[in-house]
Length: 214
Image 1 (cartoon, helix red, strand yellow):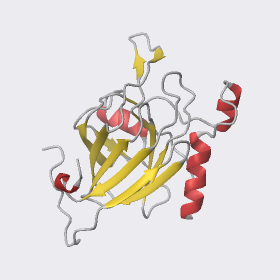
Image 2: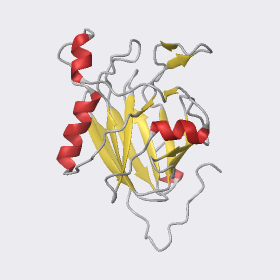
Image 3: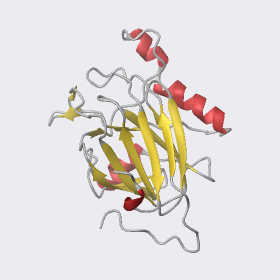
């Protein structure tokens, strides 16, 4: 089973955690090895730019580039392992009510948004930086995100075509985490037509699927 309980050695079960990330902001949650991370859209059209950083090693982060090479795929699907920049699995995708995610586009910046008609919108990079500062984390590198719920088509000629996101409030993805990781989700404007309306996201961490309310 994709979300089968991982061995947690002598670690005692941890209480469930929930964090709400408001639209046009960023929030974070610490997930321990063996726990489940669920990311839920709280509004129609919400997109979650997901970043992950090793709890103890500042130079180690979730890497969308290594994930594509490791899995030999540009498409994030059930059973796919998302890896870090050392090619070690960080988590595996299990339950997914949407099935449309992006592994190609970088995070937006405030300057990019300003130049493309989104004046006054904060970029995902700046929101990420603010959240890392709040956590007191010094990251030597800011990686590109895994863009959950973003709908971007890649054709055989390599052309990227943004399509309107189909995510609805209540849609979610659930992953089994296999390395202790601080995850940060930015819910800011992406600057990608059809995927550019910020929406709130809920982050939930539990030991078992039965712990989630839904």
